[in-house]
Amino acid sequence: MARKPKQQRSKATVDAIIEATLLTIADQGPAGITARHIAERAGIGVGSLYEYFDDKNAIVQAASERFVEDTVAMIHPLVPKMVRMDIRGAIHTLLFNFRDFLEENNELYLRFARHAFSMDMVIYQAPISRTLMDFFTQYLMHHPELLKLPNIPGLAYFYINGGIYTVIRHLSARNPTQTFEELVAVLGDTLSGYAEYTLSQKE
Image (tube, rainbow, N blue to C red):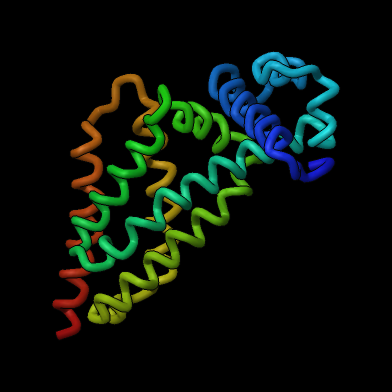
């Protein structure tokens, strides 16, 4: 970003640019967009873009960061409730809320994420992974019996990263082979069944 906005009007302009970028990428994908596309959608001149951003890549980065920030903000309020649920309930709550979040505003974030995860913007998802890892850690603290499971870091990595991609891929499919409810049930049953079986072998 070329300069950080301080005035309310400047902040509104930056928000309009980021919103326009999200919409443009959601509609067209990242490959074909230009600064002119973004400026026209934001209702400003191209020169105004460069008052706040160094180049188009910086604008795209800001848009991806907004998606990540909003995703993290969606997850945080759910954590105190989810850590007290059983595994199936926690996965159900997290994934259904993630689906609803992606489908808001005419599926803006779903359409954006569909493109974002196919390009370099994926590197900006680290805060989401950290937030989910923090949830995973808190969940273990509330369910200490699960600490007996082998390779907890690998299990967390698989479900955190695999879950994000799986939800986006499923919601993006025109004719998925199963319903979203069935998918969530499988993810919950698989982890819960694995935990129950593994812990029973240790008794």
